[in-house]
Length: 249
View 1 (cartoon, rainbow, N blue to C red):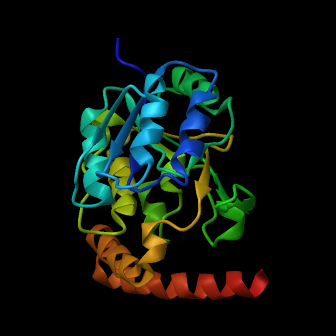
View 2 (view 1 turned 90 degrees about the horizontal axis):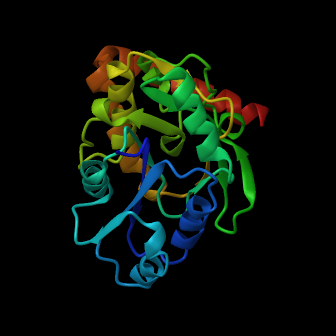
């Protein structure tokens, strides 16, 4: 019988951070899940870490890819669970009870998408704060795809989608996770807020490293879903919101 959740980790030269991700999964009280690791042919000690924890990994591959989102598509294709949950190297499930609580919620509500807040953490694991409190992105308890008009409302690692509605990621856009969430929400019949934090998110990913291109790609995604004129109007709101948030913090 297939598992309820497929947890998927993407890695590339991630020896500094991968172990904390795996340990957060090994610590879980629940067992109704599979764990998939997709590595992009790392040259450091990443594979040694994967092999060290191999008995906890359902399946893994290591081969060249065309970037993060190509690797995520590979993980999605390998998944057999009813839901997919991406937890990349350095990110962690929030605590040892997180998966058990999510599985209980799935059993009782049977939604297509589950989402919650994310705790941002530094490289040393120390907390920065909840995403909804330290960024301008407030977290609605009733989420629709239209809420994404002003940007990504939900951290990707705090967004769990039924595999049947989860599309492929565009591999040439640094904001492909925003596009993916919007498409999932458009396809979902029921979206459920999880009243507990799902993940610890390591700040400083690909979109942060290439911030300018990420902003351009975000604009392209929003134009695709909301139209050019509305996106231009919305970006003026984004800039105003950001300035107000900065002023008040």
